[in-house]
Length: 358
Image (cartoon, rainbow, N blue to C red; front, top):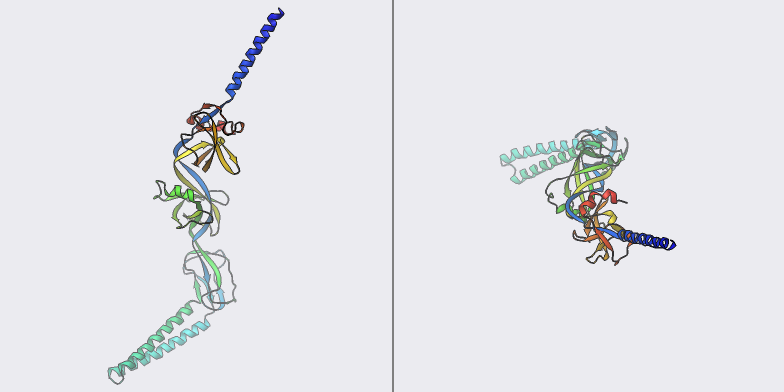
């Protein structure tokens, strides 16, 4: 009886060890899959600077005392609206003097013309009188221009910034008075890296006006959509970026010159190679995957990520759709190790990424 019991115990232990070995064997199989390749679009955010479509400095063109200010800081102005008046007395006196000299030379010219018609004076004397008269008329025009410059008016509809001077200030020629911004439309500048510029410029929709969204500083979208209208002609050699400019209508005047925000740009990507994020690992700021060869040997390979979406990476360099990559168990294996693998269909893998996400 004791021998029978010992025999049963040995059989049980053997069966248990065999089942444990089979379970370990099954557990050692690592899931592998292929990247998928497809046309897709990604959204990228770029820090942006917001500028008025017209933003100018209002400066004094003439010297003199600032006699009167007709506007206030932050005021909306109409084209031609009076802004500043520089004391005009000297310029008005110069104008009246020039007008008087013009009248004198006009009389002299008319008298000389009558004498020339009678052949009493030569044609040269008539020409000299005419030249003096023309000079006097030019002096009147110049004096009138200087006088007009004492009245400074808004050159276009816009919003005025803060005042740099006060009434009674002695102004020099060219002194800054204020600035004026036309905010009816806004130019939003953002810098795009070279690789993303190339994706954009080589896309099938490159000849269409690209529509973009502006996220304001409060992270809320600006209600109007913008259009990418221009790309600068040169890359910045220091940053490797090139500037794009999008134009936004600003009917409610929400945007102001000097604001910041983020441009959201949709970039089409043709034949993009896509893999799960969890199939990658980092070493010294570089990203890698394990590629599985025909003999089930894993090889560490560096990749370049061109875009990142939820749970997936879009690969710029390093992989093709035919490569088999290790999907899980990355921390349990070593480079050049032979593994037992289980192939998973990429469609199944990508449809269940939420299950694979760590």
